[in-house]
Length: 242
Ligand SMILES: [Fe+2]
Image (cartoon, rainbow, N blue to C red):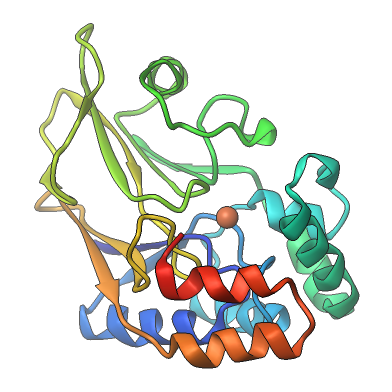
């Protein structure tokens, strides 16, 4: 099975469409979505209906739950909070019902799919430091987890009791016996200094993972954000990938 792993679309329709076109060219057979289809961007309902047509293998992100009152948005930063309040007003009843039904975590065999972290996914903890990564590995039940949330792609590996290692490139052949936490980056709001949309491709038979970058019409997405009256910073950050 050839998987496409997408996360953090955040209402950015232009980026989402470009990634869908690309994953079809890559002949991905199954798509997993790792959360945050809404929040920040100007097209929450359009992105939701695209997602529904694309896959049913979806987990919830903090912005998804925040937009339907299932998680506390007081902990969000000011621009994220104001975008969530805007998104709440835009969501159609069917979009709201869809978001409310999303699970926090899914599993197939050895592979976990989660937005933030395998341990206590409802707390939306970030994995940005080595102690945070060690903690996440302690709670990982299988050998592999795909996640999003930080908007920064990374491959972390752990061989039995040795320390967590960062795989230096955004691709790897996964070794049996070694466990992996893979962050697939963000489709709609990358924060690793590259404006191109990011998503992961994983070939289950060959155990090969790689990150893909896809250019899209950033200016169109920015213009919609400004027109909607959302914080200007949310438009500006897209061209810088921050
Ligand atoms: Fe996100």
